[in-house]
Image (cartoon, rainbow, N blue to C red; front, top):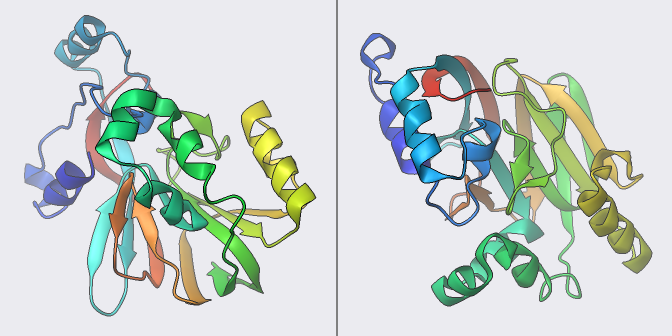
Length: 231
């Protein structure tokens, strides 16, 4: 999905093809946001229906690079979870592989000193992770951005403050119960732009793919790609 999104964004908007997804990935998070059925014949039937809507895309950039994504960017300790996922773990655990990968990270969290500008609002704090969402789910259909919409022209920024072991338990339990944004450790904003600095440098996964570059800025591009889905 991420490779296709980046290829499409390098085509003139007037000539940009419509994008349809058959859900054959590990987690199929973005397919879920588009309400594409997991059943393959039903997914193909939806594609054949030609039900198309315009979908926002997020541009992620620094001085050295520019990339695009459709669903979610997850930075900080989230990247360490993704880096533990071998092909064997993905095959064995399926969408639950992200929970399996998190087990080895939760006892050894790294703290990042961040400066984040959410439009005109500035935050300086110690953080465990930053999520920048266009879609609602990540890491196997876990709803970490329940208020996100791929058609509202906004990105949902979720900053997880550093805490203690009890805070970690609350975050994990509320994530599974669907009340993640109610945690005291969570800062949530809906904005058009985020700029971010971090010590140590914070790497991200974008649509599940780990990137080595450290992003500085996130911008939403409203209605950038025509997507097939029932969203």
